[in-house]
Image (tube, rainbow, N blue to C red; front, side, top):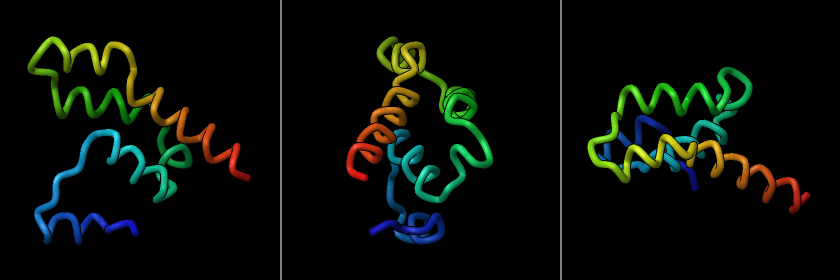
Length: 78
């Protein structure tokens, strides 16, 4: 069950960056309105890395990889 942005806000829930990218994909924002690489770039600017491990998260394009793996899994199921 997916929550809307408003429900997440009202319930004060936290969302990981990977979860946020999945949310954008399920909402058909990615790739129809913006590509996942642009989302990753925006997130890196809005949620900057504070520690070396977080820098590596963006440097290795972890979000793009997760997005690609999710697409591969969806394509295999159909």
